[in-house]
Length: 211
Image (tube, rainbow, N blue to C red; front, side):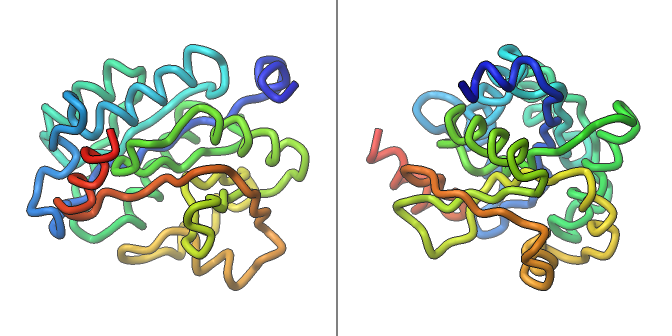
């Protein structure tokens, strides 16, 4: 039922955040190979599928300047590429740029799925659940993964009403602190499995070992 609904109602845009330096990894994190493909290619494939099936109505990807190799799979997936000249300042600047780009490309955009480029296990099922919960509640939605219930889950689906709050963000923080201060703006839903970040080489090796 949820999949059919996503085809007939307004769909969110994706904002892929892929401008981080990956300093804990040693640099070039999103180009590191995972199961025969660069890490970013896994997220790009998920976004491409969601675009192709109508789950998403568009996508932008925020990347560092002149990141040609990083840009290629995201461009192929159908993302509009946005360079962040201030990428080293942290996630907040990329989030603001991404939301501003969605607004420019579609002034009537209704929501934005904030996708982290270093979470290659993100699947279509989680996206469907988030969209269905957003449509049912009219609020922003965050997943809580069964295997990591204590950790803030991603991606987060931001309803258009909360986008202006991103203007106050600074550094390497997303919307988490704002939602902590205003819990009435957010719905948390339970989803199966896990969606781990790849922050270090050890994280990547753990995913390789699970394949």
